[in-house]
Amino acid sequence: MGIRDILAVIILIAFGVYYRLIPHEPNFSPLIPITVFCGFIISRKTNVWIAGLVPLAVLFISDFFIGFYKGMFFVYLSFIVCFLLSFVYSKFFYFEDRIKQVLNVNASALINSIVFFVISNFGVWLFSNMYDKTLGGLAECFFMALPFFKNSMLSAVIFTTLIFLSYYALEERKKNFPIFDEYNKDIVNRNPK
Image 1 (cartoon, rainbow, N blue to C red):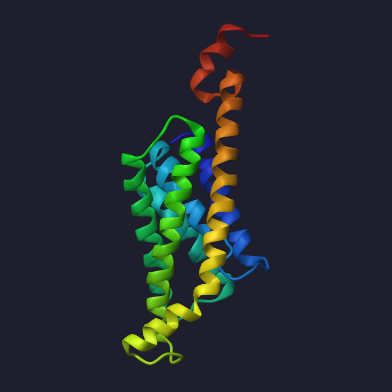
Image 2: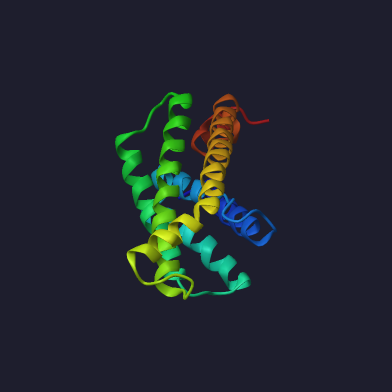
């Protein structure tokens, strides 16, 4: 794991924590896109366990400031499942074409939004007194959460596109300026000033 990979992990965690702490629309967050990015990219550049811990670190650090809550187990569980799905999905559907890949990771982000919606709202239904502990109560819980689901889906597409296009732009810059690439240090050594 190189310095660039460590920096990427720190930036992702800082961005995720910052966004959770500032005022924002409910469930309009970059956390699912960060999880997808970790499953697709960070897991290829670092250890898969480190990549999987990034979204959990974002949650834990920000929850430390926001406050811990009932049902947080289900939120954390949903992000573990989302990371694993993204990681497995990336093994079967990874494209060299950047446009296809952005569409692909957005599909993964939308799937993960559904996973988060189902798991986290099951936790709300199970641990809150707002809904009857019946199938009707569970259905009501899911129905009442639909406005949050809309925000989750919208933020998944927006932030996933921004994160991956930014990453691809940085990768292109690295190709055009190999002096900044830690793997091409020999170019710098051959041309000393």
